Amino acid sequence: MSTHWVPLQSIPAGGSAYRIADQVFWQGLVDEFALRLRIADPIEAYVRVFPREEGVLFRGNIRGRVSLPCDRCSGDSMVSLNASFDNFEPFPCERPPVKATGMRPSQENAPEETDASVIRLAAHGKGIEINPSALAWEEFSLALPLKPLCSRDCKGLCPFCGCDRNTDDCSCGAGRADPRLSVLQGLVIHKK
Ligand SMILES: [Zn+2]
Ligand SMILES: [Zn+2]
Image (cartoon, rainbow, N blue to C red):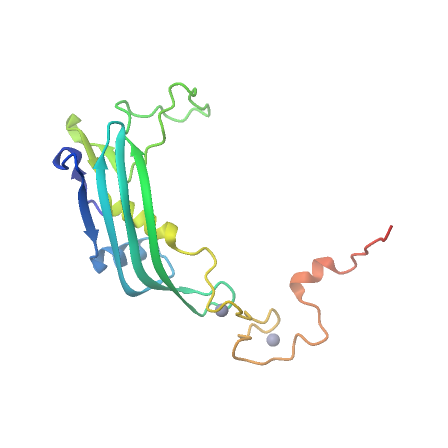
């Protein structure tokens, strides 16, 4: 993960804006997290940062175009990204979190969850640091579809021979039940 940490005190009360459009940064993270995607059009994030009393507000958007494997046939699925976000990150607590003991901290002492890759205490008690590019990466990951499709009516792969039913014709399905449905064979429905 990149280490573009910015001291919070360097940000004016009116906020600062960051543009994260370095494709080496984006590609580096795609590789680091071994994501199966190809950047088709440059990815660009705008992050505006507003210091608040209890934390930091991050607002912005992500644009770009990526190619992902289709959920049904693994072919190319082009996805245009255009996502806005509006995230509040509370300040991390001064004390280090208590090590897991299998017990949840009581509600009273439990601080709001802090995203340590985005906001942290600076070393040697020098205030708070934030990482706008880490936030941009998180928002990018969230903007990706869970089940991308190459087309809305993609026919997927044949469950018998594995051919791509969008481009190949096979006859193995004829007269045979889909093996994925075999669990239903012998199922008798009783009418009342
Ligand atoms: Zn497909
Ligand atoms: Zn087949």
